[in-house]
Amino acid sequence: MSKTKRSIDWVKTKGERYAGIHLLAEFWQGKAVEDPSRLKEILITAAKKSHNIPLEVTIHQFKPHGITGVILLAESHLSIHSWPEFHYLAVDVFSCGEKGRPSLALEYLKKEFRPKKVELQIIKRGVIR
Image 1: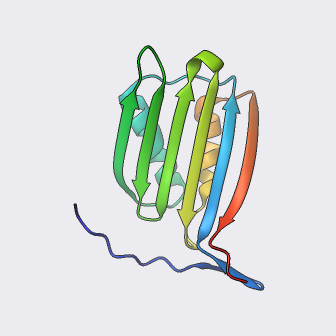
Image 2: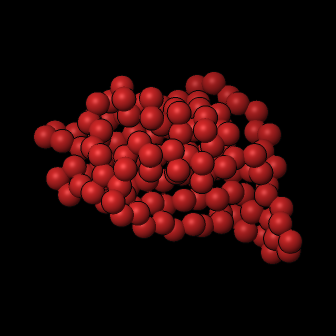
């Protein structure tokens, strides 16, 4: 296992500091991607669009269907879990520090998967007031 120097400053806003933003998205009735190499491309592109540094990607395909992809970022992680039989994707984008823009990854993923319905939770992680 290689080591990467941690060089991420916490986000500072009026009255608080926090580690980063964690987006939890539910994609309903969108495009299904069952090809592991295509999912890997999507994850890497999403990470780069959000100004994050991809470190490692793991993809696991389930039988008879469904796929999970996780990309480890220098700033945290991005993951997608699919349940094609329910036309559902669970999407996680967690980006620490001031430079990452998790919302840009989410916008890219919306364009790729074209869900008809998106439910979103936005969580500030590690808030210090």
